Image (tube, rainbow, N blue to C red; front, side):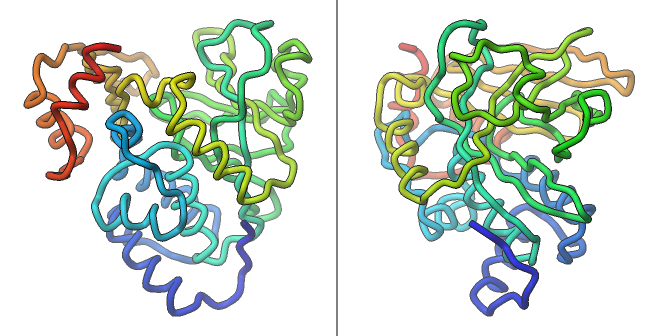
Length: 300
């Protein structure tokens, strides 16, 4: 997907207006770096990451219309293919240059030498003010809380935010075995203590739409990835990361000095799950089978 800087069409203007209302954004729609960063921040604070559709046996539609219906009109959340599809469409409608979606291999939670994981994540790259940036809204609980510049030396690439420090660097910097990273050009990392943990690697090559459709089908229907056999959700505020891992709810609050504290609780019923979804993750959908969602989480 490529976004030019030409005039926004009537259909794009309608979509962009609805999207801005959904994320509560009332700022400048010009394709500036500041506007891109602000839209990304509003998106990740308004639209939750969640896998309720595949966890309850529903298909995940990643057409433009399907994503807009679910995340904008029905005010649901979604996972990476939906978030990236929605955010990249909005950035292109704003006239941002070089909007591209790329497939990624997820390394978070895997040890070095475990081999190359499937390309099950989608992230977006854009161009602004003479530099390319990675813009990700769909990585879940540890989603980068800022947009990340590309092409800088490792010591210059870190982006510090109230919710952590992240960077995107050349794949060689990660130090992963070559067998773990075929086709990977850069890695996204988070600072943990004094070191860097690799979250995922990005394939910057060209992708056909069918590549994303096949990856989405695999993630949303196979029992090999976790999305059909467990429940997960996350959202962030200016000072918190709120996550749900099956029935385990965690609210991590960050202090100005970068330290954080976490409050944990366990959900004990489908009603508690539905209430947490409404109050914390802003999900209100009467059509969802909350009893089935709870069973999936309890059995995971």
